[in-house]
Length: 109
Image (tube, rainbow, N blue to C red; front, side, top):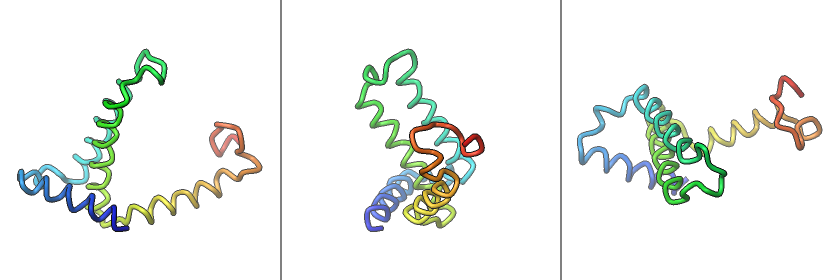
């Protein structure tokens, strides 16, 4: 997908200009996703969803996406393909007739 390629190229250029490639190994990228996800969660802590600062949510979400795209690039994953594959897998685990309107996990349906 053209947009994904543009994002990945921009991320790689940004990191390469700063010599950050050395820090962007799969393990540390996975850890960074978790750290950024924690920062995203903190924006909602002790608040209703409406009280969260949307601009800060956008920033943390962008950080998560950035590290996720870099991790996908490390493993030569096509983001569009892996997300669509996962949707297909989930459709099998969560058939509409069993899962509609419930948040139960697939093994509890």
